[in-house]
Image (cartoon, rainbow, N blue to C red; front, side, top):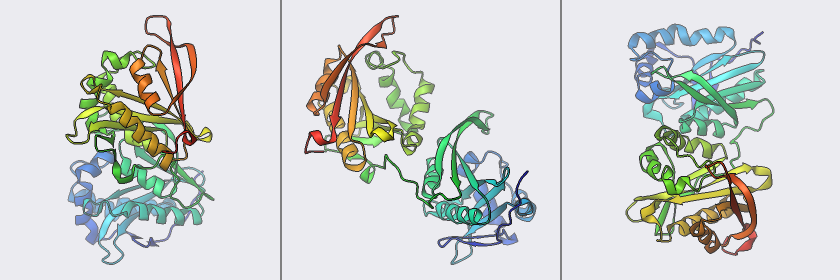
Length: 374
């Protein structure tokens, strides 16, 4: 049975004010909800979103939530009372609720969603809710950042949890705040790069994103790169698209840093370097990298690995970086050794070789304390 909780008619969020919708909000609601980005991440909205849809929402749709212990609020600028977004809380079961929000295109990148989510979350928890949930599209990193800033914790991925406007099922990331949690922001173990990128003047490392797939795939699926992977299987173009599109979310999940390696002058794609933080309690991460054939022999891999190691040891709590290299891959072994990695072992038959047999692997490691440079 759903627990009925009464929310206030208005909530002061400092930088924003949450209030009931009014008739004079209709033009702003229509314009904001007919925006392509709003429609992309809120597939339940009618498309196109009309004046009639906005009138119904303001007069009937939004107020109905208050009758069942939830609430749909207009997010308003506290100085002008102009509508800048919307946020709602829907009761689920017992004392649990689901929070959702949108921001008008004219007010994005100003912290509106974060301020509103913090305000509604704190009010709801103080009003009797014991658990609040957020669900974000895997590609909606802006919303994921809001969840983190508001103190929500990533719980996992709900597979095929929603249907987009083309009828395709999509995954959603599940976040939660429970009574007693600190207000946020949620601590990140893999923070953003300072300035958004790393460079030594020769190579430039940039966070991977969806638009990189066309450059990444030919290299990622090349015979030379596939031969040195764990699976020994070339990815499909669709798999590479998902890999690149999911890179920002994997980073925000404190799991996987994926960076494109580029020429610092021309910006030309040269390869990929990254690390995976499998278990935060051990402060250890796995390193991986590859280069396009035309970019090998220029020292790009060594420079990229050094830049990433320096960032990891300077800006994270990682104490140990490890890398596995197939025994015949002498070039990769030389890269690691030039960067200060020490070969620690020879794992016989460590991985399948793709032909029904097994292949050996050398393991290398670099410690934070091993070199004063770090």
